[in-house]
Length: 430
Image (cartoon, rainbow, N blue to C red; front, side):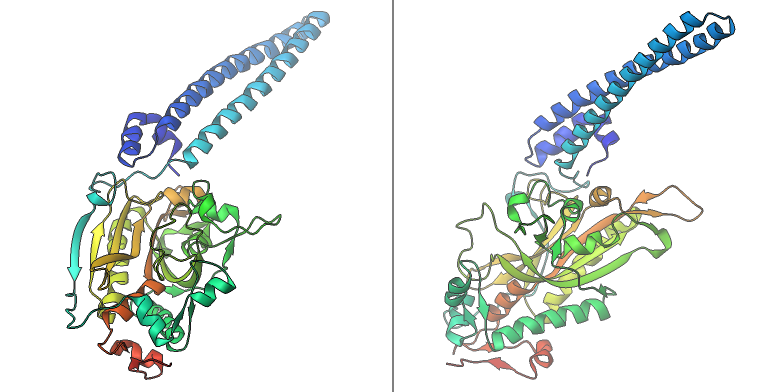
């Protein structure tokens, strides 16, 4: 959430930012109206308060002078002023609550240097790693490969649940599990993250904290009972909220967390996109990276977090590129985002496998997550960062497609073979 005073004092700047982010600016006009109303109410309340104080002094003087009737009349007047002040206080609170509700619907301010643009066409390439393999046979996509090997079954998943679900079998399921364990091992032993296993259900307060609510209500799968839980769309939600409502000590920052979880998304508004295969599913698995940092260190930690995610692809020998997203293409809560895109031979292009975002203090304000520097300083908001390290299903896809052989088998990357119980190749079980 943006700082209320910042928005109040920089309306034109914020308006320009919203325009750069393709976000409607009407809410800012309403915000300005509410702020003017709030100021008017405060001025009126101050005048009433001054009159109350003045009248109270008069009451004392009248009582000392023995003018009881006049004093009682003045008391009635003070009582009326008190009621008037209470009404004004209620109106002030209503205006401020409406302002905060508007703030909750405004996206983050992009960092300096983020490319300005309406959509993904304005993204900027940062670097590439690895060379896409040239095949001397006709490449297949992961669906044809997985089905021919008997390790992917979408038809029965549709029967059991519905579209955009899949079943992995045999070595396919083992490969998914191997990737999870491999990623967690690298992040905990090489990159210094603490592994955590959070709940897969969260409450509305947590979803507000990481800005899924109120804007992305339709993207969630909700549990329909009085508790109003929802299935997590990403481990970012429970892990970032882990220290919500707390005041941490500056000396204990940064904090690094990594978590494996399934993720659940309704994919509202994405019908017709990536309907073939596992690219866009209602249920998928991900290893998430979350950092809580001091404000002055968050940019550096963002670079490190992105490098941590890239390292997984390097170890697996999967070509990728890293891009910085434009203002119009970033997520709602991000101030800067790097997308890491892995090479998929069947599509002859790079596809997103991780988004690594620095959210600044945007999420921390929403969840009241602060820290205190040494010497009893006033608490400040931490900076929160998150990224996929990596999306497991898309890594599974990339391995099948990049390591496919002419006979339809899949060579297992050498670094994964110990996690596959020594298996070097996935071959048909039919």
